[in-house]
Image (cartoon, rainbow, N blue to C red; front, side, top):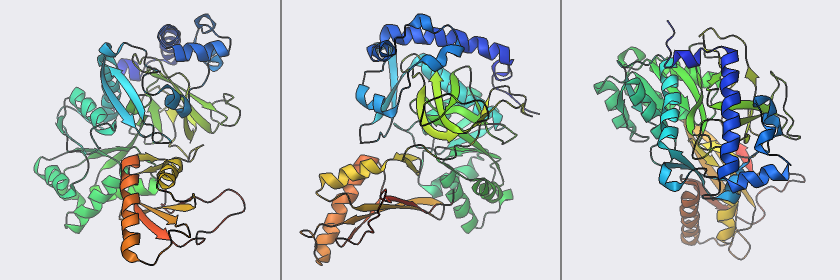
Length: 433
């Protein structure tokens, strides 16, 4: 028996969803025109005024917003409400170390938590459940989003945050946690650790998991389901739009329903920017139609994806997106953290290294590893191991402060990283995703 958190919204007719989207988009365009000079300028450059947007059919006329715009407008240039009305920021790393900072009013937080509550109920959650949130808390949206959603559903919430795996397992067992929220790679690691402890799936109280913030394969889903004895659900989101809960999986496990009362999804050709017909594969673009403080119109996610409106067995009527199939940019997601090669390059150049480096990403025992191999210049080259260790540590510290995660650094002799004729192969991703 399928349950819904807000059935009248989640199972609304397509006609009703269109009415909401039309009304809210028109209102949102007026809101940004009146309150965000950055947007008004972008619209004026295209010869647009709010009167040109009469319904969601006119969405394609609006300019795109990209990561570059977020960088240019950092920190307050896209905020559409006075700061006294904003109650929270969340943040994620940007391409060159400038962070993406998203702002929320109390109303924005309420709507975001509703979206996460829908995801928890779709995974079978009720107020009888114990929900362990093992996503990172703090600036990262994972912990706060699912935490708020869990409260709204009425679950007993365990805000463990990530890490300290033995304590995580102790709480799952002692407090009989039934729902686990974390990254898929961390779920797999918890599962492996439990197995090593001699725990079988029937000794683990968990029944469901809500896993997102990084790419994962169907094979990985099956492994997690078998090890933990649960049903594993996907969830998708971006800090720029609010965080997790932009879309979520239902019992059918065949794609994620987009919360279309809050977000309009489009698929575009990443080269031309042209909107593609339904069922086409292209870049996913989102417009937030209910956000007050930080409303993004036509935000290019860089995720390659497909949308489908085929009727879903769960009864929800909102459009479904498939798992993202890759990126139209060079972003890597490592342990749930956005990492751009350009950030790593910035750290190396700041420390006086040439831009000859290679990033090797792998997954060892379900945990992503990041190994950066860096060529020394002839002047730096030495066989003094103490000197090399000191230099490596400096780069490890520099990368940690830029990326917010630990990387292994290996300094290698000059000219040892293979030069390519064409585009340099900067990233070798050995993960089986």
